[in-house]
Each structure stands twice: as structure tokens, then as C-alpha cells.
Image 1 (cartoon, each protein chain N blue to C red):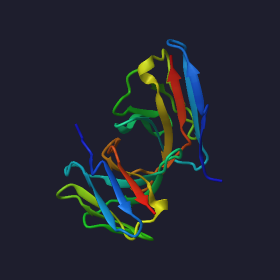
Image 2: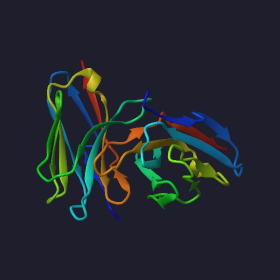
Image 3: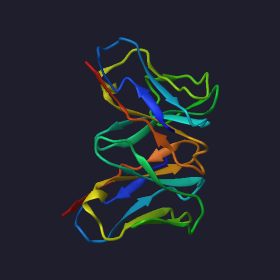
Length: 113
Length: 109
């Protein structure tokens, strides 16, 4: 089944404790992206990757890191999480977003206390 | 700053009503516009990918139009049903992807 998976789905952590949210897709998509969703603000892009070893900042990259060592995986790293990073996070992938839709993962709800 | 605006913010209609909402985006450097449907507690799902000025796309009772010269897209739902209740998002593709805040549609039986 074609899908985007994220883990964990729910995470409660404390300020400053490094964490990684994994994202994996099995559709051989070049483009992968991370978003955060906050009430009233819609989806905001954090980072995106056009292909392996190619990553770019989105709208709200501060406090986040990503890597794209393999085509299928695009982990989101919070080196020192802060309470303002409490949010719902979505990973998504696409062949080429100019021409093809994105497929979204199930979401990760992160709470930083 | 590439702002994507959606209106209205929310909409309540009766079952059977037809409705439409708007996505406004910068008219310069247009690559593509996406429409997504997002149900509560689920992930966004793609409705349409629109790339050419004048594009019209249709999926069942839902259709969309695109005007890249003036920077807007309309989404239409004909004969709304309760299962159409969701938030409808548009996304402007430049180098990155910019989403609007969405239009939350509630269809009352």
C-alpha cells in the first residue's frame, strides 16, 4: 500500500531534550516536506527536500533540522525543543509538486512542557 | 512574502446547497496550485493539482477553476452533503509550498 508513515504519532517531552520524528514513504517520491499546523495558522512548511542530499528551508525553519540521506526517509530533528514547538506535525511526499499532489502522513502531535 | 488567502474562513450550509470559496495567491512566478480536503482527525487529501491559467477540474460534485493572471482559484461544491464537512485548503507552489489557512465547511443535514 502506498503510504507515508510517521513515528511517533504522539509525543510529550520536556524543554531541551533532543527528539527526532521519523518520516518514511514507499512511493519513490523525490519531494518530501515537513509542516506544522497551529490553530488559525493553517499548515506552515518547515523544511522541504527536492531529492537526496538536497534540503531547503520553508516558511518556519527556526529550531528544526532535517536530513535526506535516503530517498525514502526524511527525519525532522528538534535539537532543543521549546514549548512554542508544541504543534501537530505532518510529513508529506510528492513526485514533483508542480504537477503532482502531495501525500500526507498521519501526523505527529508533539507537546513540549 | 508570498501570502495565500482563503475566504471565507468558515461556512455553514444546509444539505443540498451549492457553495463556493476562494483562494487568492500572488499572480507572479506561478508554478501550480493545489486543493486539499482535510477532515477532522485525519490527514489532508489532495483534490486537484492545477497548473494552467483557465484550468477547470472536476471530481464528482466538486470542481475548481484557476485564474493565474489575477491570482485566484475557486472551489465549488454542488449539492453539499454532510460528508463534505471538512476544511478545504489551497496551496501555492513557488519554490516552496504556501498554504492558506483554509475554509472550514459545515454541512447540516
